Length: 289
Ligand code: SF4
Image 1: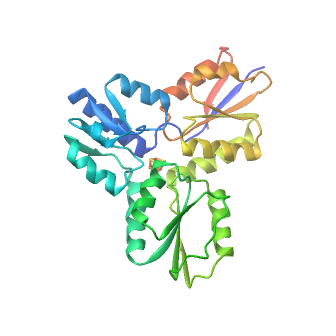
Image 2: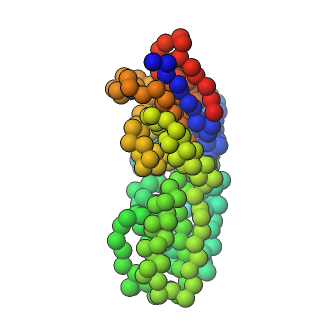
């Protein structure tokens, strides 16, 4: 059976991750060391390459003492950033411009006495930083989580999304908040980044066309997991893998048309390797849409 491999249009690093990885490599080439708080990107392959060059992942800010430091694309809470200034020799800010824009929006809404609902994963670094910026008059909600608004006294409410959440999950959360609405004013912001929206719609489109869809990306990557969630809604043969070495664990024998897409922190080299592994017969067709 001649297998067709269809590769999504938007693959590889998004520009936020490109900025973080490029900056890290540049600093590592210059100093041979660099510290970051938690994983710089949620991709184990990229992380292991950077660690080999001297990247050090720290869990406590004091460990940044005498190191240059890079702020990852998810951003940092203001208090952590303040402490960091005491320790790091130099700080490189690789916060994604989209994340920064949302942080500024949250700051502004908070200063104008809005109660802010942050929709996303409370354990994700982007949301953790956003929550610190929003302060006490805010609540982090997972899309399907139950919540209670009875103790909210502010009259103006705003809803903000994690930049990598899926649109359908965001809509679900918005409807739930609207159902509890005693506020005088409710403002909803679509803060999902355009890269995520584009990749999500491509995932949906491709999942409907192929027999199996492979999503390449880190298991800890929020945007990768959302692509899998979207793919599985229309194609039960949607698989998440981190590297080409995992392809052997998938039973793809009966699939003629296989789609490949990637999360925003997956290096395009990884996709190429994947195509090579899948194209184990010279007669197989490879093409991009
Ligand atoms: S997925 Fe979007 S918000 Fe996240 S780093 Fe990439 S461009 Fe920025």
